[in-house]
Length: 124
Image (tube, rainbow, N blue to C red; front, side, top):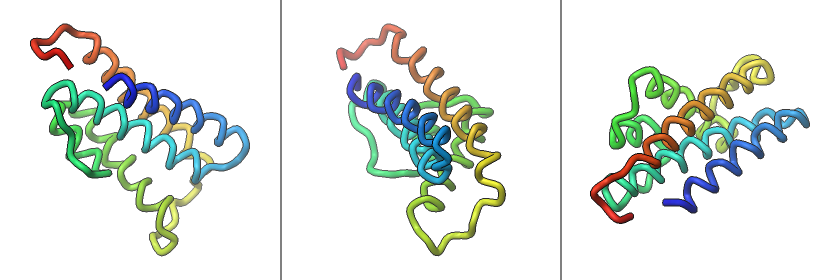
């Protein structure tokens, strides 16, 4: 769990650096990965396992992410395909949208960190 969260934090930091250097697609991928790893960290705490998926909406449901953050997950999931596969439709004005995607990921990460700090009955 802790390692997943640490990697999520590093991915979000890397996304910010990539954006600064004009690597917007890479920054978007890193933002998506940060959210995915954070959600998987919480999924591990709650259910002791996680599912092999890049679908953040599915992961969001598994951890009872609030509705406004689930809406962010839908957009971030789209980034996974866009950044990984060249035959997906382009995202118009990705340079301008990248900061918003990083913000979405950061809000998800913050919510997960709060949940992970709560006491639980499991010893994970």
